[in-house]
Length: 183
Image: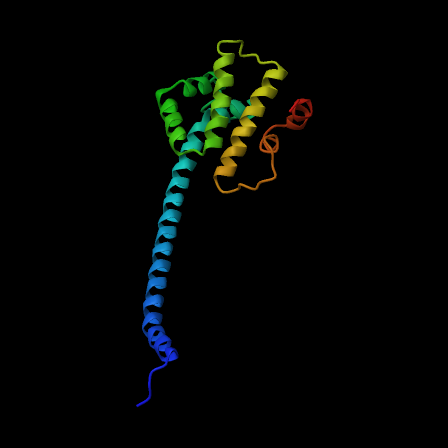
């Protein structure tokens, strides 16, 4: 009988340790995978909730930005005042409730951009509805930033667009207003 060498001991330990190590690494891998899958599922649910909340929060702004021609061409809205309707929506309990929902599910940047937009409206308060061009430019700057932050929160973090780019598709004079924006 030959005497066991240290290499034989290492080989024996390796024979036992290899399956244990493989099982341990497989368990760690499974655990990481299940955490990631759960996180992605949660993110997907959150994204769906965000979309619904964002749509409801944006509704009064969509009303405000609908062209007069498009507004009057719709038989349901022909005789209604779109500005009054938008303000009524913004002051409603449902809208306030959606604001709370936004503060819970929106990203920090979305909530801050929304706060800035709403602060603009609060500060403007009961001023005349006939806003000057500077007021429109300021409001559109806030709205563009809000839309841009929503875009980023929906997965376009590295977007190269800016707030004004978010507005051009529905405003005929967006480039003119942008050129006058001091920012």
